[in-house]
Each structure stands twice: as structure tokens, then as C-alpha cells.
Length: 97
Image 1 (cartoon, one colour):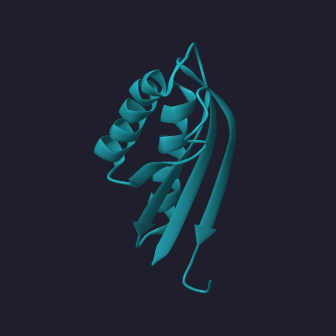
Image 2: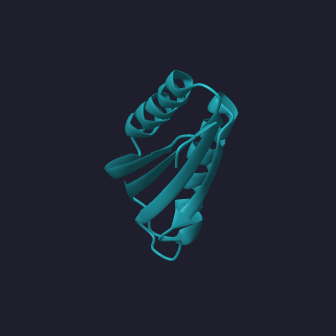
Image 3: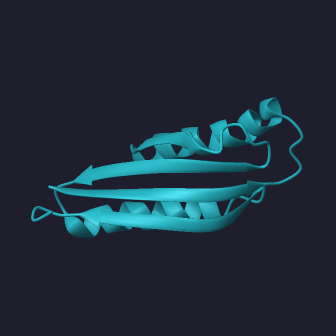
């Protein structure tokens, strides 16, 4: 069994309230969950208007499938015009970890 995680640090565009922030973050989280069947949630900076952290986890029996899903998730988030991807932290765990 292989487990992979991504942690996205995002700067949001023209957001002035937590309500506006939710209207940007929720569609990203929903798209990742729907398209890739991953576990995903807003995991940090929840009290800041223009910053957020989104965490994502994938479990797979195949290393190549795991890295492919993580790569595609990263491309989806990086391609969103309403956010600026500041950093991505990737962690991979295998049977020996």
C-alpha cells in the first residue's frame, strides 16, 4: 500500500471576507474530490481572508498510479486562475515507512 499527500499553500485573488474565501475554496476542494476520488479539505489559514492551505491524501496499491494522481491534482490547482499557488509539499509513504 502506498500513501501520498499534498499540501497546497494558496494566495487567493480579490477576496475581502471569509464568505468570499469559501466561495473560492469550496469549488476547488469539490473538484479535486469529484475528479480524482481523493480525500481533500481546507486544513490551514482558515481565519485569514486571502490565504488558505488545502490538504489532500491518496491511497493506492500502485506507485505509478499514486504519483500520477498527485501530479494531476497539482496541475488542477496550479491552473486555477483565481488562486496563486505559493508552494506545494508532497509526501510519499511506501510499505517500508
